Image (cartoon, rainbow, N blue to C red):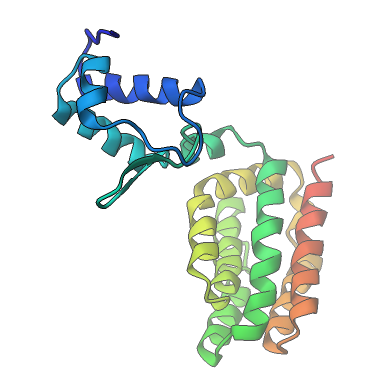
Amino acid sequence: MVQIRRTPLADQAADLLLDRIRSGEWVLGQKLPGETTLAPQLGVGRSTVREAIRQLAGRGVLAARQGSGVYVLALDAPEDWDAVLRRADIAAVIEARIAIESEAASLAAKRRTATDLRTIRRALTGRDNDAEGIEAHVDADTAFHRSIIAAAHNPILLELFDGFTPRLRQAMVEMLRLRPLHSGPADQERHARLADAVAARDAGAAASESRAHLNELKKGLR
């Protein structure tokens, strides 16, 4: 029997269950033993087992099915999203932007409304004034790109973008401090072409403009 001596007990029980899943004791999709079996194995009460299971369910490792039991949903707990983003370098952030924004631009061209288009145009005008410095320009640029993603009307794409906006902001500030030429008339014109493609409902051109712009940023890291 494994004894748990430290507190909180539920955290320790969750760690032990996760270790057993990682070791291959239970395979993907397999049903876990019941609380009456797990409790004595872990040296805790059934309520602690229930809390440990709730923790692992919240981390995406286990899934409780009403009237059926608890099943293995993943073989490890995914790393915290914020921790991943804090560790990511600028190139990785830009690659993530390419994946999200090129698809969002294509969808925006197909789905944008007149209201969306007005928001995009306002944001485009807003990013044209960088007199207040790099950080203000980055914020205006982020608002423009977010307006394109919002026009795609896909809440998952928007949530992904919003999730890494803090790391994105940091990355772009660092980028422009290294390569200030990325902001200027030519850069504004490229963004205008993206807005025009969305306005024209040209999905292919919108995706292409988005991808080309971000690939250019990535090349600037070299």
